[in-house]
Length: 137
Image (cartoon, rainbow, N blue to C red; front, side, top):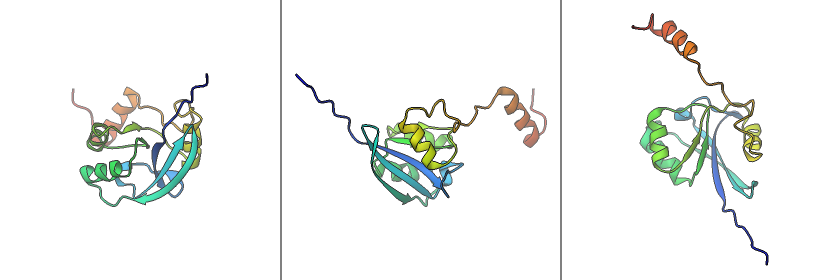
């Protein structure tokens, strides 16, 4: 007896800035939405998100039916609003939008060269000192 396994359509959003993943999702104006079924693209569309208010932005993202957001960086307030709405966020991704999409579909995004290196404690220390003087002890 054959049993058909049905995989529902999954809607993935990637902020697009001239063909590259936008550096910060909070201010990205254009997003690419791709519908995937059985790891195959079923359709795509582009949308504008003009508001930078985290709650309005989160409402727009959820209103578009997004299930997964792939981005480079996102503020904590917007991340909290989206995750509480049930949206999975894959953060720290950069590169060409099409490359990122193919890498995601292939299941290789975690190991991909498109991932931004996580900050080390030493880098955080250096950054804090550069912008705010010596860190307080």
